Length: 339
Image 1 (cartoon, rainbow, N blue to C red):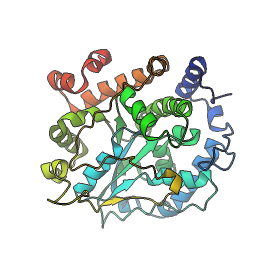
Image 2: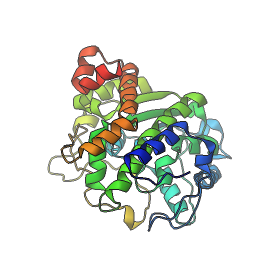
Image 3: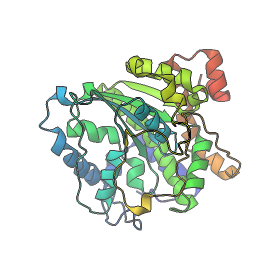
Image 4: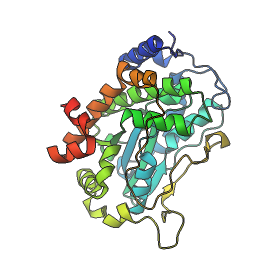
């Protein structure tokens, strides 16, 4: 089994493999990749190690001690950091990919430290975001929700917010922002894997009985109304304020006025300059796609990434109850294609 190819034909075979998700994929030896991965290891081994680490904090806690966790997940570069800031602005603790941080330590054989989730008596609601990809295959294939559930986080205390973004825009962001860390052909391959792996997270949640809300980045074009609907669906209407969406800075401040986003400790290799846009509000940031080649755009269609996004659009329209006019404004031709 080979998932290292970069030709169009090999990318299609990789995409088919990720969609089918045979058990053999989990036991495939994954080779070292520079500073990102220093050991040959299987995905199954990594998942087990991270699960055991998380279980150190989870296994002895009663279900009622776990806060309600609004768990956002999607391929990398889908606006998840802005959403983390938004939830942090409401006052609840907002965690920045704590599970992938543990996975990354496992990739290089570092000691693993569990995620210390607060007690529900102290924090009844928390937010966390995880992104799939981009640098090595393991982080493009892993299922962060599975880590939580198998480690003992109660299903009834979870709500998955499934994230997505228009494929050409998010791929262009990968290639522009991450090219200093990996070659373009590697990023393209991992992007395809991550985009298709994300769909498995949503289907896994449904099988586990975890509620799912699909939330595509493009709804942030009408941020206040979309966030109001999202919070209503999550049962957080009482936490919604327009200021949390529109006002992230006090007059004269150069940084977002948000002390509740909690970042993990990560190696220097992951600190990419200008990775995140500094902003004063939650809003849509258009990404130019003119830098993408016709061949790269064709890969998105041939490998099923566009189809996966069309399914995300349809699910987002359904979950947020968007009417036809608003759906057309937000998603354009993708709505008709998803119908």
